[in-house]
Amino acid sequence: MDDKRFFSRVGFSYFMMVVLTVAVQFLLSLLLSLIAPQAAGLPVTSWLLAMVPLYLVAIPVCAKMMQALPNMQLYRNEMRPGQWIRTLCICIFVMYVGNIIGNAVSALIAQGTGLDLSFELGELLSQGSPWFTLLFVLAPVMEELIFRKVLIDRTIVYGDKAAVVLSGLLFGVFHGNFHQFFYAFGLGCIFAYVYIRTGKLKYTISLHMAVNMLGGFLSSLLLQQLNYSAWDTSDPYAYIDMMFNHAGAVLGLVILEISMIIMGIAGLIFFAVSVKKLEWRSGEYERPFHEMAGAMFGNPGMILFLLSGVCLFVLDML
Image 1 (cartoon, rainbow, N blue to C red):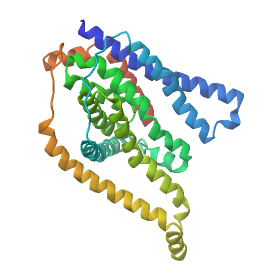
Image 2 (cartoon, rainbow, N blue to C red):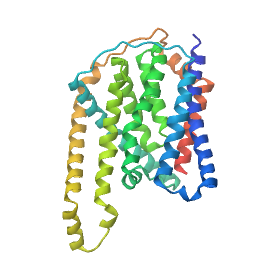
Image 3 (tube, rainbow, N blue to C red):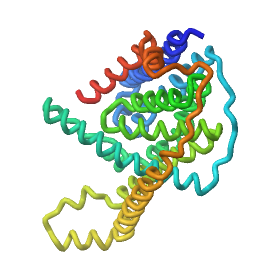
Image 4 (tube, rainbow, N blue to C red):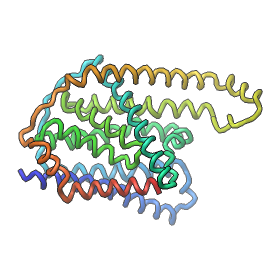
């Protein structure tokens, strides 16, 4: 097996996923502006333009291209409920740490360049329809398919560590901005390890859905009930009335945040206890670290993918 050619095929497949997503989004936007310009600002239009090119076009094409590479059937093992809950807590901890790093990096870049790097996902979630935010729960099915099963079934021959790092890195770059890169990389590595140890996507999909549910969907529903834009008032009596009128949503947000903090602290403890117990199996084509890094990233396909990721990051900053 030619290692560089193998990873170049991987990189080029995911590069095409990025290119097709952007290209189809541009073409659909152009077509929409000509046929129905009045629909351009509708939430459902944003939903379709953001998701249809990726999930119905780009990911299927990427999966088809990856079929040219030999795949390997992983051993199938069950994950006990207690293990799943502990893993979810570790995911919440990694998400918090990744968010802190991402926000810090974005703030440093903004300070040095003067660019506005404020992240709009929270605003999008709080103002969009429940059907839009619900997609953040359903999208993990396609994302786990392409970033875990399709990728890991083929790269596992280079060992667990190579498969986990590559899965996490591609997943992080795929998000296209510094705010999400770090926690997406960390979560991608966790999901990859879970998939390798169990051989079943149902566990990574359910973990991915749970993280999206706790990290975005539930809070967005509560924020919609709050109508927080109306809270910008200098009248203390009006503010008190709003507190009473939205007591359920306020209480829900408080409970959600406290629960997330408790899970994050538990996740830190579980991570510290379990990190030394991780099992890393060698692969048939595993190489020493410097050779492995050169084979994985020193090839045209992976360079193209990483360059496309850089373009996404730059476009997000601009």
